[in-house]
Every structure is written in C-alpha cells, then in structure tokens.
Length: 395
Image (cartoon, rainbow, N blue to C red; front, top):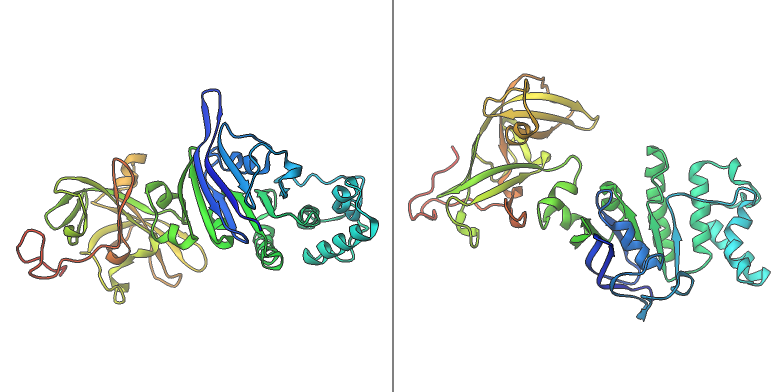
C-alpha cells in the first residue's frame, strides 16, 4: 500500500519558513502533483517525504508506517530528479541495475527487474548503450527505469521534465501517465508548470509561500478555486481580475456593472469591496454570445494586442475608454480584459467592440482576504431583487 500522509508538517531554516503546517492525505495509487511558483516550498515538501530533509514539526507516514525520522533507504520510496545524473561510464543496464547490485540482489532477480523496467519505459534493445549515445528523453527514461526496479511503494518525482524541450515534455507527460497506469503506483510529482499538473494528476496540491492553498482534482481547482492565488495560478492564460463595489443589484467596477442577485452572497453588504474573476474563454463578443445563457450587460471596449495561437486568438481589450499609451501596470489591471475568440474571427487591433461576460462562470473573491465567495452568479429575476423592487433585465 502506498498511502502518504503529512500531518502538520513544517520546515524552518532559521527565520525562513519553507513549509508551514502542511497537511496532505495521498491515497494509494494516486497521482498527486505539488504545484506552485518557484520558492513556494513544493520541493521541500517532497524532500521531507523522501527523507532528504527532516521536518521541524509534524509527522510523515508511508503505508501506515511513521517514517518521519527514517533514512530514505528505509522508506520504500524511489526518487527521480530534475537532473538525470546517470553514470556516464556505465551502460543503460548497469545504470538501471546499480542500486540492486549495491544491495547484492541475485543476478537472476536483477535481470528480471531490469527487463521489466526496460519494457515499461520502452528501452528494449538499448540496454548496452552508453548515456552519451541517447537522446534527452531516452536518458530520462533510464532514470525512471532506475526507480522502477526498486519496486517502491511510492515514486517521488522532482520536476523530471524541466530540462527537456517543449515537444519532448509533452511526449513524456503521456509516457508518465502510461507508467502510472501500468504500475498502479502512488506518484508524488513536483512541478511549477500548471499545464503538467492539470493534465497528469488525480489531485493537485497548490502551494504558495509554504502554505497549502487547495488540494483537489484539477478541474475543481480550475472551476472552483478556493482563493485569488489559485484562480490566478491555475489556468493558462490567467484569469482576469477586476475590483468593484457591491451595490443593491450587483457589482459596480470602475468601467462596467455586473448585475446579479446579491442575496446569494452570505455576509456581504452594500459597499463591500470584491474582486470579480473571469477567464478569457468566458468573455464573448456580443455577436458570439447567442449560446450564453446568462450574459451580463454589454461592455464597450477597444481591442489592443492580438495573439494568434492557431486554434484560438487571445485578444487584449481595453475598457472604460482606456488607451495603451502610457498605461502603467496598475491601470492595465483595472482597465484591461483578456478574451479568447475563434481563429477565423475577423478582428483587428484598435477596433471598437462590445463584449459580454458569461455570468454562470464568473467568480467573486474577497478583495482583502482573497478568499472565494461565489462561483457562478445568479441573476435576480423580476420581482425578486434584493431591495424588494423589480430587478431590471440586461437589455
């Protein structure tokens, strides 16, 4: 069994807290990804599981065994690092089998494990090659095979694809998913690339400044982020954020109004400051909004920068009469939205457009704390407005 449990794990270095009160329950056979920006504590968390770092506080168990103070060799884990670190003077067979031979396994058992691992990672016929005769992807497979032969309870992977080119990384993502299916093993994977986290994981642990922000399936983190950090980190390109003030029938931002039933917001009062979040795919040109069930009122804007991506075009639009000339970063945040449109759309920069937001996919966050308040906004039907008067429609 490969369950991994972290209970109130913290790691401090003098006055720096790398991991702060981390609690994770990873189930047997799960593929869990620790994701976050550089320096957030994800690798330190993995190192505490591996035994390379002893936590300052808390306990770690693997397969119902307390391994908090055990050395790595006694934890039933195998690790794959960002730097492949193969022995350059050994062929593939010797690199894969090195750990087994060091532990004096019988030759027959060594051969069995090496052959099985080579088959899983598709290295058959390459066991006599030297590392400098192989591509980057093949060398990474050797490193993974070296972990497989140990037949561990848990695989720990610290950004194993970071040094590969973009095309090879996509290929190796698929290979790792096949490996997980083949071995039915527990994998704890570290990356700063949220695309890797979204595509490979059963659950994602989003970490920032040493603290766990959300631990949930990828689509839950995407559709129901627990706070502003998760909403902005998960998803590429990032979610749009616009601050506003709650009024009697919705949220008034500096440039536009979003009408909804404010009665659905527990503990929120008129004049409270909230942050509206909307993903680029939920911003529509009014001409393309026929299938949007609950569009907001039309928002006048001007297109700024276009980024053709092949299957879509990312369009930066400026609201409230803003112009790109002389705009600082703060102005960009408050007067700019990113929109995704079909690649065959006839659209140019510096073009006046009208857009609507898909109310069913809008998010609201507490501006001060960053905590999520609502995912999807309900429109106030006629006669049921929060002020007791008839709520006006969007037309």
